[in-house]
Length: 236
Image 1: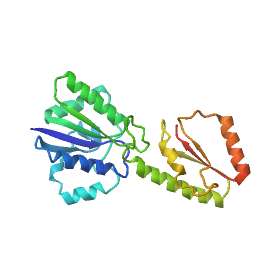
Image 2: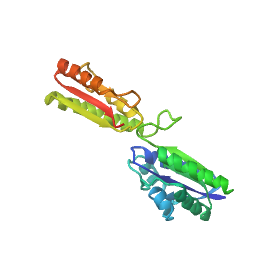
Image 3: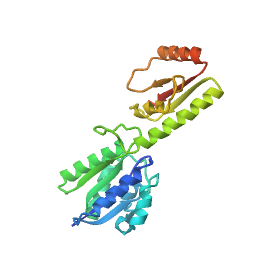
Image 4: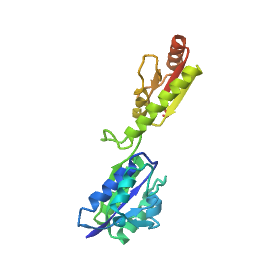
């Protein structure tokens, strides 16, 4: 028998706790796993061995956690380098942790990759699992990342409200939406449109080259036609 650990990293989402509870419930089904640790505040807590015993949490509590937003185990924005990951691996060895579940986005996936490679080089049998979580849906080989749907609904509703404001106080309104390298979340801004003149009227994503002259001409065209313009643009 061996031990396992699960932790949450990066920005919270509306469903990241559902992923956490999914890991807990599945891990508890397997006799190969003795203790199941919860690493508080991501890698920052793991190196300090700031753990809780997740197997002691009642089923009713887990059900409430799964339906709650934010990160129940706490989070961290630390981006571990090789030295940092080596410290994490030492803790895993000390606690005989052979299963490492890390819920997060791109940086969390990279952390799993580094730790997995280190364990292989040192002959330490470890299974590192990256559990996808990112609202901008920019993880490779991931179609619909948990968290994207709820964030997309929020963006669509927010733009519906902004469009009403823009109708009352006409002008040019630019909404900047998360997604440095991916325009999926910005694309959801149009889902609340019901009429041809509903905003956003213009949408700009990082997958398409941006030209300032074309942008200004687009805005001018919409403004001349409607007397107002709502724009959705990815932060990248």
